[in-house]
Image 1: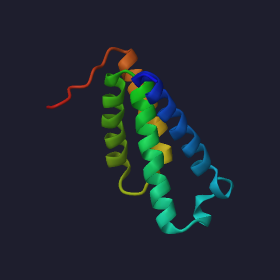
Image 2: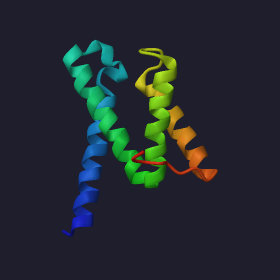
Image 3: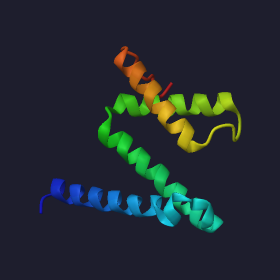
Length: 107
């Protein structure tokens, strides 16, 4: 098995793991312990970050992070959930990228 095939197999395993985690208690994570919810949320965030890097040019991922931080800052603590902010940030970053905007990373 070459490195690419190994990475694809690992990706498939992560996909299946997230599908299982996402559907625990019929998708109602509040029926699980607080510790479980925190761990599941951490996994979900990592999974979404991996998808961003896998499916989007590097510039879109960087723009998405910038937009995410701006939305979170503008809304204040707890106004929007991660699930609500993430698609907004992705959509905004994609629109910015498609209009020619590139991140000024490192400044």
